[in-house]
Length: 176
Image (tube, rainbow, N blue to C red; front, side, top):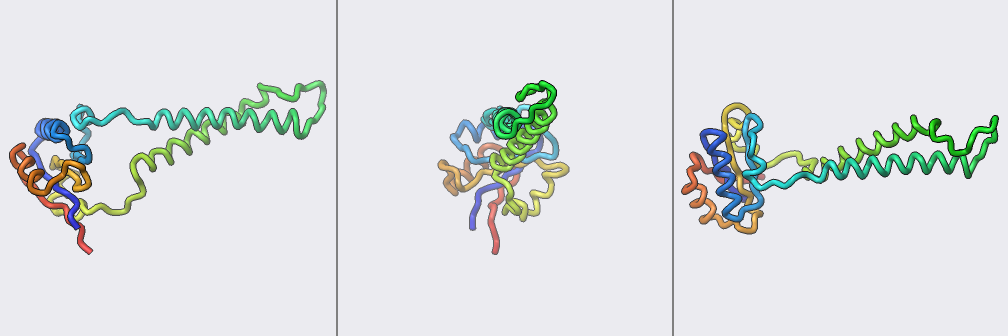
């Protein structure tokens, strides 16, 4: 099964330039690979800011309000214990539980939100079967365009990558 093309460039600057060309040509479903983080690659690829901080904030708010609601309900409404004039909704006494549930819900929303946004778990990808792709962990700079992209055409995409200065263009195939 055909999954797209993988092309190699010689340095990070060329990878950024190729990413800009691919983005400007209308491709959306493409990715870059390098042995180290490259400053500016997100902007070159047209990647927008993540919504993960908003998911974390939502989890924190849900944790905070659920902790307060739980304690107000249990101590002040459901099971009132009248003890030495203590108020039923004693906010200072609620701080430890509120803190813990806020952190717990934030962590859950962050981790599971990250998994969902990254489309994980994904155990294997066909790109990992390519021998040349192994260089991406030490010295190679790669860009892949998925065949799922709306602008993808086998011949046009190959010729576009060839004209754009890619050194090595390979087909990403999945073998059974």
